[in-house]
Length: 295
Ligand code: GLU
Image (cartoon, rainbow, N blue to C red; front, side, top):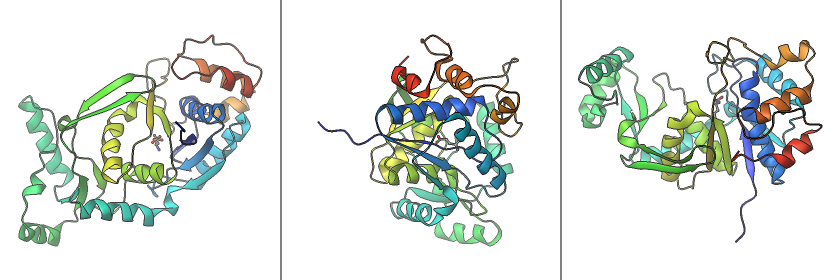
């Protein structure tokens, strides 16, 4: 049986400089592509224009180049809104993208009520019961946001790191794909890109597990098979705190300025948390040759 060529991507949002945790994500995807003679894509996730900055796009490129993590292709999500709109239109046509008019306060109230009754704070889909008249009336004073209608079944995948995963879609709120101000969100943009670019493997942080469940359904609804997913643990600071691109903790550029050697950093980040010895490896080629996601 022949397999499709391996295509991976690293997809940072340019909202800060890369830190050591981001480097791990980049490295795993880069090593998979290099090991399989595949393609590695740098994707800039800049759908949120208010938070994205060119300075950070440049910084991300400089940092990856410093470490020798070269990419074969690169693009920005902000250049692809037409494709995302088309995907949204397809979902609308299938009745899988529906308008909602609750305000943030109303949603918060619903959440609190659900929690106080011991129920999971899942969106109750009341927007699905609105008549055309109701909607027209609401539109006079509110701009609607759009949610994807999850099929309430179990979503399963065999995770490249975590092993077999299963999430009950009924325990997840229908994800908002388009905000009230019309901004198209990452969830749909990412699915559209992964399909269009033929992405075969996605390695990303554990914080994306729920996204993965919903993205698997969106991908299938759009007529494609999802890529193979793997979720790695997240590095934390010494007090257990999350690393933050926006706060600039353990930024790659600071380590560079402090004279850290690229291969020292890359060797550590490629192997920390794995069953392989954490030691300085001579070259990227040697790291790639011995890389095994399963470990
Ligand atoms: N922009 C997302 C992030 O930085 C990308 C997640 C993904 O790999 O799909 O977390």
